[in-house]
Image 1 (cartoon, rainbow, N blue to C red):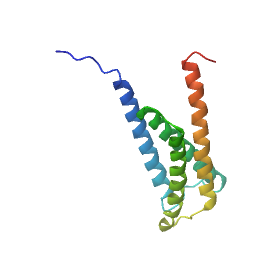
Image 2 (cartoon, helix red, strand yellow):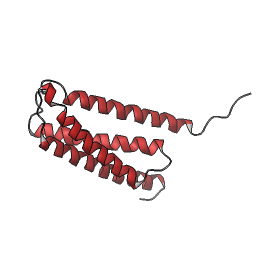
Image 3 (cartoon, rainbow, N blue to C red):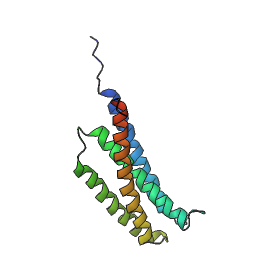
Image 4 (cartoon, rainbow, N blue to C red):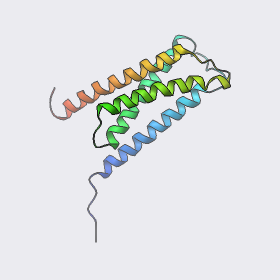
Length: 137
């Protein structure tokens, strides 16, 4: 007896892909910030840009994963993502010192700015996409 296809199945696959992407991004960021020697070309301003972009991407990725996995994403989820990324940034900076890397409060500040901006980018992008999907421009 054939079963009817589950209409939620495609979304489950997308949610699983988003979860994988988020986990992979987190691993890449952790490994990248804990390499014993800094990568050539990422000194000063470029390093700060990498912190900002990495945390913005991570914030967007986590929020997209939540959006695809939960019935409803509420303000407390956004705040939880922000707090988690702020605290992860502290953890990330502190745990770099055993690898002969520098624990830098300015790097952490760029992590926080990136996480905050990522949440804002996600909210704006989400609103724009929902408007386009509903036919509103």
